[in-house]
Image (cartoon, rainbow, N blue to C red; front, side, top):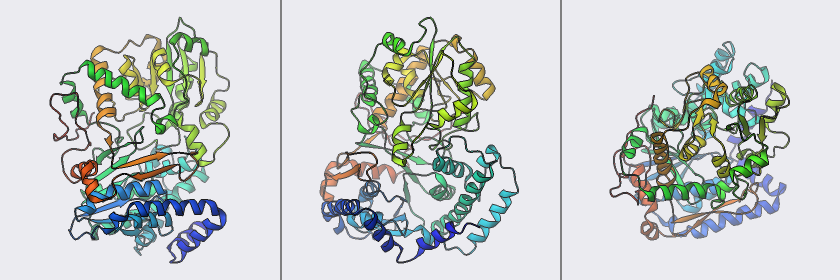
Length: 577
């Protein structure tokens, strides 16, 4: 029996554990420890006026499901809590007893009640319940689909468990039938069960009015989110889009729980399509697409090699494409990253989809096929210290072998820029990637292999089964161009998503510098340093107004190009299909 998980959990609960963590950090890397403390002191000095905000006296409460020890994430969440604190709300933060950076970071901004999740796991019935659930699942089916649908007391733990294992091993196709993989899943299952009990216990005693979370999935915070949704507690999912001056917010409900945050509600799209589309909208959309791939935003630039724009003729020559054939590009996802949360798949997982798609490409020589690996593979692997061949390369080598001349693999550092690729290819293939929004804006069809944030909205070629999808790939050379109506819907969706969904902030700045492996690669600079200055900027007040209201699941900024904005209209989510 491996006692290490038990000993680790026991250590994390000890009162002196934070001091040992600090000591270990200092001994192992004194310079890094010094830099971290200097950064925390910089934030503390800048936030001096915010520490003077009186502790919340109103019954209203904000709960931040933090669970991050990164100084950037902590500072960002402390800033987002400011407008609530200035209104007299109480703020609880779920963190860890050993996350000393988080403890100092929140303290730098003033009054927050830190809840250590280790202490919430104190329900005496939870360990026995965890063992019973493990025993029950151990005796049941262990195929991928079965595990995917595991639930415990209303919490959908299956995708959280599979994704956690996938992310830890950088494997896009973890097979639960492998005893070693199944044991990893069962170990995390026990933790998830205890988190479900902890969430039920906390939310029953301290029901918050709003919950803020950055990572609502995986086996730690996922149960808290599911329990809160079941109890009707408003949850705001925030994420940083492809620009470092903005965030995207979506309210999580039973209908939006598995919808990507960077999306817009289907009924809102229907209303926006009916409004005038002007040359100004076309120009702004082109600028947004250009900024995503030109290196303007460092967050997006790390996903793109900064290549000069190339003509379609130059791309075809560089890649040795047959000019007499149509060209299709398969835009692969990061196989092991957050791949089970947003929609329904017609294949078991991204790894399964990827290899079956490449096999279909091999079998159809009437098309030039480009297999483009997701550029985020590079920096995410660098952050995690992973080297060697990519998971996609391993799958191709194991399942196919050498690729024929009409199928070409484009690695993350390819010399071909994405915009140049858009203008060269005739069709794109994805499960639910952003390409399904972008490429149709160029009048080109996208074939999808799963539901998601834009499926069923009229501008992608969607499928209900793997057999139907593979049949489309077998006849891809006959796929017609996108209709004008479909292209218009895609443009309206993309414009709304890229130009209006971001909450652009000015009361603080996000700064990126140095290598991505540096824990201080991203930092927060406070521009507004007093409550009065925060109010004068207005951005944080706009966020809090929307978060505390019931006026729609998507934060939406005004459209400066529209005669009448619908940003303040009630937008309710109606599932598509």
